[in-house]
Image (cartoon, rainbow, N blue to C red):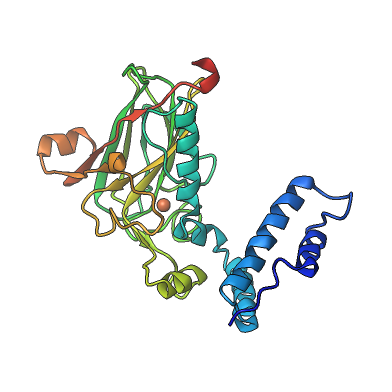
Length: 296
Ligand code: FE
């Protein structure tokens, strides 16, 4: 039988002191968050009768998670990124600012400062093997008017699921480009079809996910930021259809509107016209961005 001590004066005083609420110094917001955080953890220890062995196992796990740089990986795996999106969507809706292409999680693998070009870009260096992909679309406003000069910042994995800067075998900014839309709002990228990927085998994240009876895999996907002055910054990504994990993403990023077909193209004229040497896949993703709240 679990003992109940949470509501005793000793524990309530301990919580106040541990969060610095009996001191004038310090950061009030940090104190508020810490008091709530500690109260919830203490309460969980009481409610679930957490043993000291379980508690210290958890503490050691946090050490290991940090030393493996995996806190930003387990966060989406435990739904935090998606939960923050749900809150942001609800806030937009409450304020009448919803609409446009849905947002979804950024993930931890963005790198700033990718090469910028107008209208189109080749994303892949000459050394990276993979099936060709023509990735293109139009950026429009809520009335369907094309938006010229929007910056479409795209990043994705290679055919083995690795990202430049995190996979040392890839060159700088491989599969990362910023494309400014042309006068008709269009962007075009020549790249390779990305593969999905999983959490590092034997790592801290997969250890927990497997303990929960879950997997740690993402489907093939392509990340986007879309930005232009006066418009709300859009963070999103598309999942390619037909992947085993399209609707079973461990990071909960899938949204129906963001599942896109990769259409195989074998037409010799199109292959030549679009600068490929062999059959390629056509991926069309049109994007609607909305005006910034204060300009509505
Ligand atoms: Fe990713």
